[in-house]
Image (cartoon, rainbow, N blue to C red; front, top):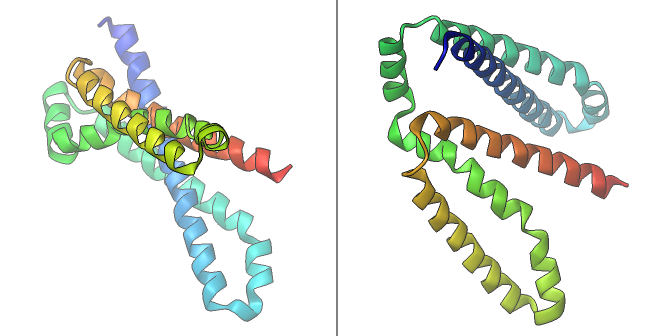
Length: 176
């Protein structure tokens, strides 16, 4: 890998990790808003109506925390980076992260269940979808051993981001 491509990969990794951290911050803030709504049911309307600043603050805090962590990891020398990856991610963590790619395939193909259900009935559709799920898991595990290790985490994170994008598109589509 050349020095410029290594630098651009580092920058993209820092940006990607920071964006994921911002999304986690928004998620934590949303959970806190829901808890507050549940605790103060009488005054729920002001909390729900004014939750956008809380979500923005959660996103900013997550973004800053992710940026700090990513920059600190990026400054490590390669040997220390490998020890950090082994310590905090490890083989199990890489498999869990990689699981985002097959999950995206399964979720993206879920509308087929509706189509199968209309033509063949609910039982056939569910069993076909279950077989499809098992096939996707089998193929993804087969490919996991054949994909270079440096691509495993980016593939998994991309799959997870596509799941979020799919959920947002579905939410927008159903709101019409």
